[in-house]
Image (tube, rainbow, N blue to C red; front, side, top):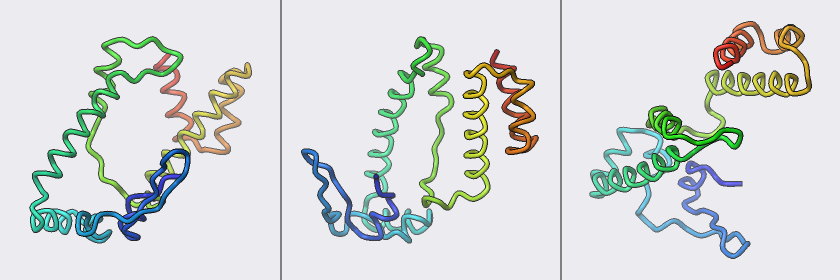
Amino acid sequence: MAESIYTQLTNQNCLTPVDGKEFRHNLPAGLFPTVEQFENPELLVEWADENDYTAKLIQKGLQKAIIEVRAAFKSCPKEKVWNEEMGLANIDAMEWKSVDRPNQGGTKNLNEARFKDCMAMILKLSENGMDHETIKPMVLTIYGEEIVEAIFTAITNEA
């Protein structure tokens, strides 16, 4: 399993797979911020400025972002046929995000996880032949009205 960047910066080392084996090695000395600097936008910019990395890191980040844009453009669920409109919609949905510590997401991440879990349950029950009128009361007791109504509204709008 991949380590978070927070773990890597704290330990100043990382795991790298080579020929089916994993090797732990140090990060290059002085090339990365501390975890405290990484987590705090002001300290991170200060660190980058002090080390003359600001423009270099922005350039590297933008270079990688273009690769992500290209990957998003050609991304397509297996059950669908790719088209240019889908690719453009994928690109329009992209956004810049901060790298948060793992397991620190709080309510927002918990709600997203519950939403995805509920959606998966509804889809699985539907695939097994249950109709929505039978499914709805079952999932309401587990996930609550807000999540269930949002999912059924999305399903209805998609159909």
